[in-house]
Length: 282
Ligand SMILES: Nc1ncnc2c1ncn2[C@@H]1O[C@H](COP(=O)(O)OP(=O)(O)OP(=O)(O)O)[C@@H](O)[C@H]1O
Image (cartoon, rainbow, N blue to C red):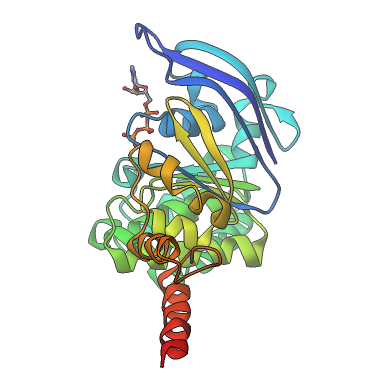
């Protein structure tokens, strides 16, 4: 679905490279997570995937990005929009209407859909993120989690094959963050949508994503399934990422010879293994 080859980018007037020879492949239907310390180049990469870099944000760009088999530098913007939907960190700045339904219509306005077609797409995208009841709601009365869902629904109305989200939970509390990841999982599993999510909350990435890329200094330093990446605690901590507490505990248990298999990817899994260890000790 995504094939990135030797991608480098320096912002205009900036001496350093924000992206430096980045290579990455995401298969169709994957729920793919990206993490990394501040300044690793994650947001710049997300903006390359939707074409904002270098079309809107100028700088020194090199490399190739193929999405759904098309070189995005050679693809007109309107065609890119129907393949890739994006939702960015500061969701409030993306919302332009005061009523939920109008917000979703806004994204479709330039695409000359009939009124009936728009109606179907509004209902479908609101249902996919579980907020059909908010169709006529005032956006500014909604919670942060609900606004995130409105932004996702707006992107979904264009029926993209790929959804890119840059730190969607940055303004959300732990419960709303978890709920959002359940919504993304449902879009991925039920609707087959490929999802790329940049996220600081590593526990969510390890728990929900099929595959992860860890970025540092503009390139990918670790890539693999959650369990494989989690095993590389040393590298994660070296670049300043804190592994979730349950995983840390199991690293220590492994070190002292109490735990012998892979590190659990969620608190639930950790509890199950701990219960077994305690049971054996009785
Ligand atoms: N508009 C800009 N002009 C110049 N340099 C920039 C600009 N935006 C980002 N950078 C620089 O590019 C590098 C990568 O930044 P980017 O925001 O992509 O990293 P990030 O991993 O998303 O960080 P964070 O987690 O803090 O959002 C950093 O060194 C940053 O200072």
